[in-house]
Length: 242
Image (cartoon, rainbow, N blue to C red; front, top):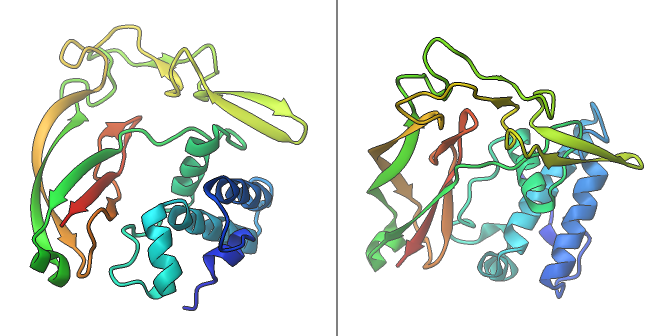
């Protein structure tokens, strides 16, 4: 598939600075946000394109490689794209603290690690074993954080939404509920094993595929490889040191 130029997607000149890039992304994302364009598949594609364009152009190293090689840059840009629409919405909310229709709120549980590579490993690509110390659902309470035999209850402050919505014209601004911290529920009686967190520490090994041609300082995202938070796993970001 032929991809559109990232600068064209965001309506930018190639000399645009970081502030202009962020402003352009915000403008495009607001224009094509799914909640403003319900059922419009074309707008949804534009929304996805804008997120991908910003992901590259906002990173100085990725942008320099894109400016030199375009979409055909060797080794790609160190990320595999977004996992889905909810992932992009989370990315948008993380940046601007905004949500539409109650779908805002950032992804928590992201983990960052650095992996050292020899020159040949970077050139040829390889598999690397890494060990992650991360949190997994508590086996005693099955991740609820509540004492066995009890259950969390809906948060009375936000009505279980996890967010407080404020109407500003035709835009709804979402902020994280301070009582439940975005969970939408509160725990009256805490689990004795995890002290109400719903997770316990756990070490595990993981094999990652290092793409051929990766450069020093490039980061790769492994979807779902991070900590469990709010019932779902964050991402693992692997930065390569060649």
